[in-house]
Length: 218
Image (cartoon, rainbow, N blue to C red; front, top):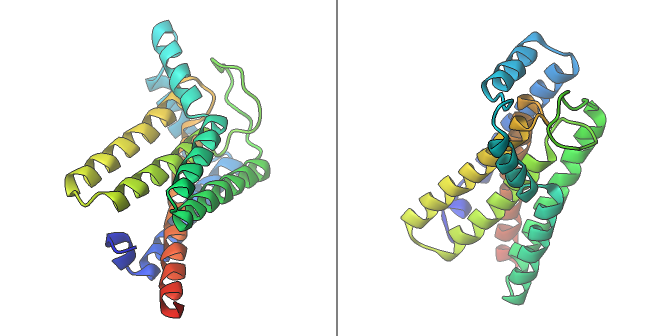
């Protein structure tokens, strides 16, 4: 990758991945131990996003949540990989495939390990454990994949900046919808963001290292 991502020292990406992962583990530990700080944080956000008298907003948030579902994002990931393969960008397609599905498997593993029940008073029908949020994690992976593709295909700094802002806004919108609908605690979506950042940093570092080694042997 002949761009800023490639020139960035690999060890910094690994350090970033480690920091985000440690923060995720700390948050997960507080969730498991029912820490007072986490409980206060969750309830404060819930009270701020009280949807009791906003039926239209509830319907809107439900639509956003559907667009950020793991099932929908999985289909998007497969489409991205197929399109990249059709245009002969095999390495990038494999990278996105492994990052999305490997990261999703890791998020699912932590769901099973933590086994946090979902909040009471949900506004949608859902099942499974709550921490971390699969919606927010997979949305983060898709936002990252699309941002990376645009970054590689465009040399415009403005396009890069706009892409980053839109990707971040979409992830935040899905995160807010999950909390608004009472299907996740705020700490669930925060945990997903931390885990997603850890996976992205690690994957970028690994990809850069592999591409560098392949360049040496070619």
